[in-house]
Length: 343
Image (cartoon, rainbow, N blue to C red):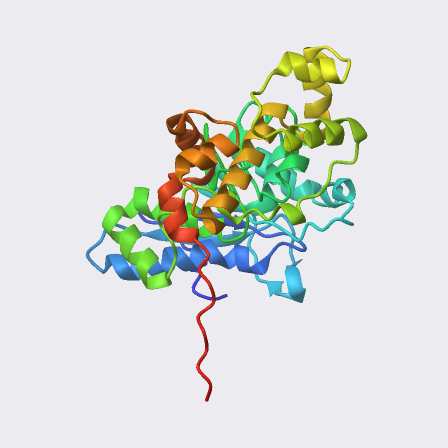
């Protein structure tokens, strides 16, 4: 079971944080063990004189669970914990999500019951779909993998999906971005439980980046699912072709012969966000490309994507990527391949 400290029968001592990982058929085995293993490393870093650490158990409403890759998991019944972690699963374009979630109704009921007792509930990656099905994301801010954020927003319009964020906590419910964001969550948990020193040392030991702020730099637009309806595609095409123009909602609605209210409603129904949010994301993506590949000044790049005020552009860019433009350029600038000497 890796480094996970599964306490089947022993009770947790005073001050010990009880963490339960909810295993279910087809869940990512690595996400079942990823958080517990990092917590175990934190315990080693903290040392024997540190405050009490963590008690981790792998729980399930089922007697037997086979995770991704055919990995058989030892599980114990769902019990009272302080934090319940819900891992993700392989969500592919041909997944019948409704049928999948229906098969996981025992797990969804367990999530709902744990939340009702005041347990902090955390989803990793697309585990957010289980939390949403349990009703925990209604009226809350949330995130998930950038690849599936639009689908989460479409299916659950009462959730405020923030696809640029790595970790979002709102009223006792935490959601994380794709796969490795489980470590961002775990480091935050360690930071709050054991302090900054232990969290930072654990990150160094595990070679985990503890300074990430956004998943936007990792987005590959070529992998994003294309909206299946014509209206939003036409609106996006018009916005994309006129990045440098001032955003004018009324003029945009006139161009498509609808009211502004209708435009906003139909666009959100098809994409899960507003036209302005799409435009800003596209502008930032274009700016990222220019920062990576050109020598243009930040002011020139800002103007090229529709911002006459470099300060306004820099603030928007930082909100989407977690970095100011100059810092982003320094981190992601593409340099020519070095010449390899002949042998």
